[in-house]
Length: 156
Image (cartoon, rainbow, N blue to C red; front, side, top):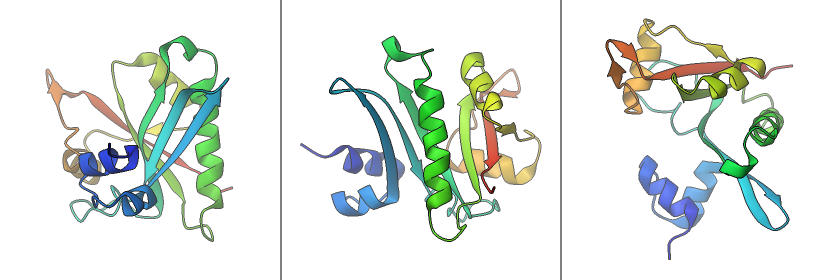
């Protein structure tokens, strides 16, 4: 059975080798009583795509998942705060920003990110549109993008 790293890697177009895929994706997992209740995946691969002009000194939050029974209990917040700490510790200030997409309709999740200091990027700015399109997240509903691109500077 393939590892999670290999499965995620193949979905993201990363190398099929488990070890390489695991290196490309940083996963932080929160476990309680021996059960995974949430995880967050980050990668630099998205920012390195040649299809846009966003700064590459950052990490992209590919996924944040929280077990339904553990939602609204601070698990997502804890995972994102830990992700920021983890990113700050990478290299010598190499990681300057965390980027993510969130479904515009997920108001509670958007609010969480805003409370954590993430800022919405303008839908009309070319480099943001190109980045969203490169990740195939450019679906629209009545001319309004379904996904919101957000960024947070993590430099202290």
